[in-house]
Image (cartoon, rainbow, N blue to C red; front, side):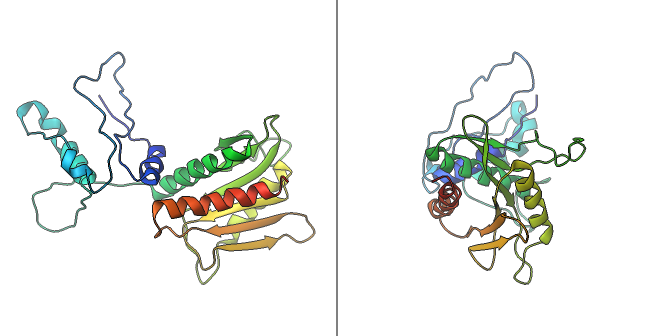
Length: 237
């Protein structure tokens, strides 16, 4: 039996200010979750006091590394490469994917108040008529009759010498050209300025680069993303 942690739940846990049991997928068909219960919602500070107690036995010996790691995470702890009692074989996260899922989910939620529907990781479009060059924007915003009205891409990058990679602009220009949009939005994990807009020569297209301040509180980061959604919706008035 294997379990997968879906990174799309990370931004929900973080943005709500409370930890919940991650979504688990059981790989064994027909199996039941015996003895598994959801953790109650609680603030990060209160959660360690309500965690269930477990004891290592020969029956759970195969799960003990995972249980110890889960307990460490839920208690808000961390690990350092120093001598200690915790054995850690490896704990890696694809932060590009985590950031992308967080921004896509939060921005999609923020756009719902303006109507339409959001399609994350939209792979239906191609840049060329021969459909050889595929496109995959992180988020495309459509009207209910399937007309594209907004596009955004998340980049887990910081600026270098006050500039972002120009390749990001070329990528967004391709998205806007294919979708017939005159505005595109790139959302970064950090940057020298909150907002920078580039107007493309010989074109009506403008591409805006947004830099989030991830050191802020969860609610403040969500407010930053809500402001991006508001800016995307301004063009619809």
